Amino acid sequence: MDNKTSSYILFDNGEHKCIVFTSLVKGEGIQANQFLIINDREGAVIDPGGDLTYSPLTFELLKYIPLNRIRYVFGSHQDPDIITSMPRWLMHTQASIVASKLWARFLPHLNSAFTSGKMTGNWEDRLIELPDEGMSVPIGQSELCCIPAHFLHSVGNFQFYDPISKVLFSGDLGASVVGDPQTPVTDMEAHLRSMRGFHQRYMCSNRILRYWVEMVREMDIDMIVPQHGAPFVGREPIEQFLDWLWHLECGVDLIEPRIYRCPKTRLAVA
Image (tube, rainbow, N blue to C red; front, side, top):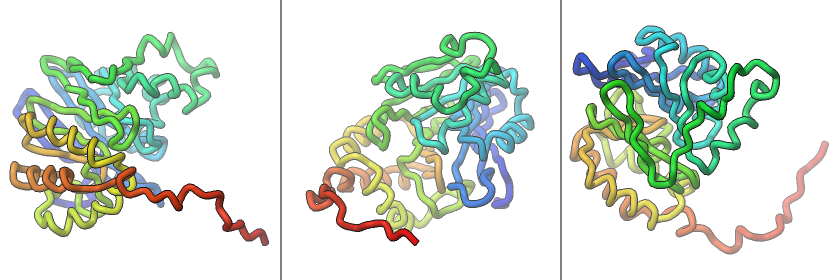
């Protein structure tokens, strides 16, 4: 596929669509994928990003659905590249924000629009706080399953499973800074090597990874699509990815006590 394409259809059976948006960040900001689910003329946006992506993303969305038909904006966790554009979605659409109960109340700190009078109505009425065990949220005649992925890497982390397309939108789990978001992983050995450093630093522990792998192996999944980098498509690549996570030591498994010292390095001031 053409890498310059900003959006492409991941799944379309005539009634249900999954669209991926890529390469919307210009300049030095980290590239991230954003997602749109459409069913029965209703839409849901997953991990819409921040100010760097809001304008180009809404421009691309309008090719598929009017903004007034976006019913939900889902945030997997609180990173800036995930949902710092949330105040704009509240101001310019009627969408509800779906996020973990652990950090949903921190969202007003993202923008002064909440207190400047630019926000109409009570924004709290449009905030859906996910319990730790997750829930399913209806979209048209379908639903999006918010599944727990806590500590992978946020304390209140969720992933989103679409049972019609059988796509798991996995957030930062499976993310890589290499690989074309529009081209599935083919060289698994090389791709897993490229992911190792990020996953060892950002994911909490092997114990949590194994809980997640056990859950995912019971699900009917055809694709795992992360927020950064290439997707895993088909059972063989997915199983290879799950096997790799099962044995991966990361986070607190690797941290050393010597890190916890008052630093001796001093900033050099000109």
